[in-house]
Length: 102
Image 1 (cartoon, rainbow, N blue to C red):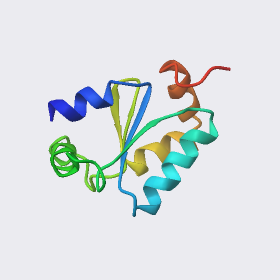
Image 2 (tube, helix red, strand yellow):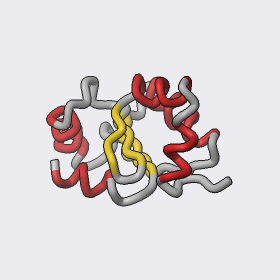
Image 3 (cartoon, rainbow, N blue to C red):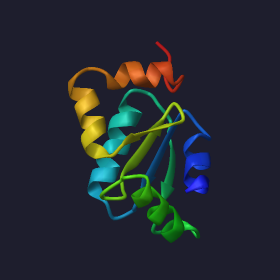
């Protein structure tokens, strides 16, 4: 779990995905559309992917991907990101995390 938390805090936006997950791709595209440049870890191709996936599940991510960290904090998965976006709060969160500048 420490490895995932450390990686999640390594950049303004970190996304844990799987290469075959279309929802993960959609969330990454949404975040990039604001101008953010997230670090993306694809668990199915990463050497420690299985351990990282287990750690994400222990943190409460069900399903394990996508899991999004913004501003060094675990925001959650696709539902949380889409909810923030619909309420107009995702952009402000990205700004506060210094992931984007206006």
